[in-house]
Image 1 (cartoon, rainbow, N blue to C red):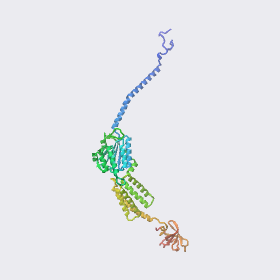
Image 2 (cartoon, rainbow, N blue to C red; image 1 turned 45 degrees about the vertical axis):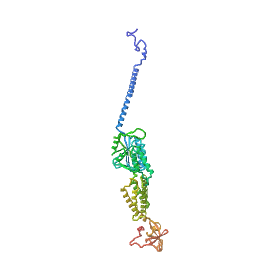
Image 3 (cartoon, rainbow, N blue to C red; image 1 turned 30 degrees about the horizontal axis):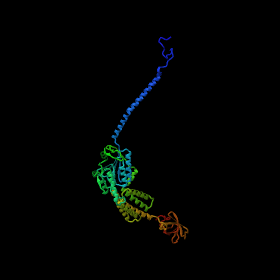
Length: 494
């Protein structure tokens, strides 16, 4: 019978009929819960992806904008190189490394603060080529007041993208000189003038004035150079220069767009010269070159005159080699070199034939005039170095000559001359009664002694050497000293 409630529900215990499968393949409640969680997770992931797709570009754009704003607020640094002295291969290498550092380091410009009397033509041309091929703007500032861009420095200034000068500075005097003091041919002069014109024309500056600095040696002040369009501006200091250049467009090598300078508040990064480069550059100084050559020659001559442990000779050779290096990068006049050679010869004569100091005085005078005529152009030996050095070296040669003379007088002779006049004591005789020979101690060695007249000698008798017969000393006897209690000291008198 069926119960009053009707048919039993599927799956109910005690039901009267077998359980039926769920319609439509329904899953158990646990499976349905897991499915819902999976769907919610997938929906959350899709929402996250969509949100990221919308927000990331905005965030990226905002970061880029902030970076651009920061870049605009903090402009790239300006690289600083300082040149104070002669243009040498050391300076050429230094500026070449500065140009490379400015290009590779992302600097917006290279600032070269210049003060030079000139230098080597080959080094100048290397620097100019680097400036013309630079992919960053090169700014040359002749500074501080009282500085100059003379000779090679003038052409280097003309080759910069921006040429600036401080008030009270000068530029020009670019006539080439011969390092050996000879005359410059028209061929060399015309080549240098054409080179200066080409550089100035390349930078849009006064080519005629550039040629005049070479042909006529013309030199002008900063104000006149600005009027002649030889330079771009006059600025008193670094900060004023960078303010003046702010916003300028500078065409650079490489065919790209012009570089726009933002230098008003730009930081300045120094490009220092290495230790050994700075040391080599410091040697290219007329004063040091003169001192090295003078003192080195005197030290070497003194070593030759009075040989010792060799310290003077070593120092002399080192100083001479260093002086020759300095001469290799400086414009030298042949007359000055000739006078230096004459001074060395006169000082050597004083060392080997000392007298009343005639040769020393002549050497000092030759040294003085040699220093005056040694270098060409504006590079000169300072009188504060030239005069004291010449006087001291002349006096030193005179003193060294006297010392060498005394050393030669004290130098022991050989043979009989080394012992003639020496006094000794006869220590023993072979035959006390008539023995003409005996033994005596002289200079730490035992000698056979014999009276020169064959007269007998006795032990303890003083004698004086008068000659040498083979290995036997010929002596003459001396009277005993009053109160002597024994043999006299053989080394008491020299």
